[in-house]
Amino acid sequence: MSSATTNARGHESVSEAVRVEHSDDGVSPSRAVVEAVSDPAGVEPVDLADEAGIVLYEHVDLDALDTLVASHPEVDLDVSLSVAGYAVSVDATAAVVQPSR
Image: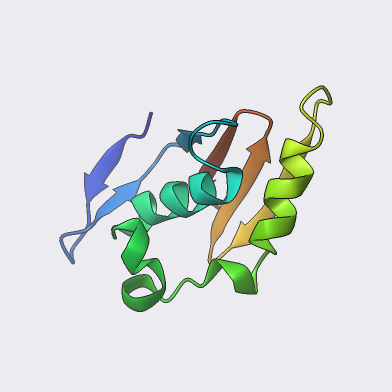
């Protein structure tokens, strides 16, 4: 769900939101955040800290995020935060990342 263009360094920059879904039996909310942030950063999720310098646990407690989202599936919950210039929103089904305006 992203629209990408290539920047001068050869990495793609995202002009639209990146959405990564999570579920009880698959990707956790925190993993969805990692995957969603790594896309516009132009790195693989495992390289987010080393190559992009983005350490997510410095911005949010990932275990607490998973617990909060998982413990309230019936509630219209939306957790929003800013991570390294990206606006991150996590709800009951997905993590959505877009460049901060």
